[in-house]
Length: 98
Image (cartoon, rainbow, N blue to C red):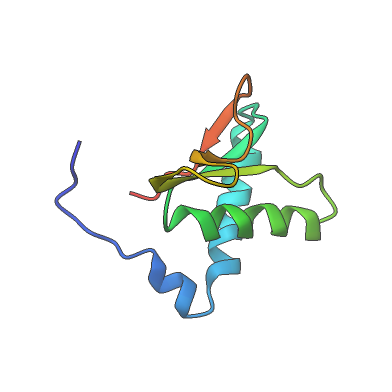
């Protein structure tokens, strides 16, 4: 599905509102009651959002969510691959930003 609208979520990142946005996502995640093991932030704009959400969770004194993300290009050195973070055999919650 392709939307006829474009919203530049990165404007939150550069205007100092990332924590506000992370707080909204955190609330929705908790209120949803959806069980998950790891939070997935899709490249590239979902990565800082996932990191901010899990950081905020820790600041609230709750157990932080582990995070994972993908790369646009496959890496053939270091840990390699497309996915950073361990998602195998885990329930993944995908952050949607569209």
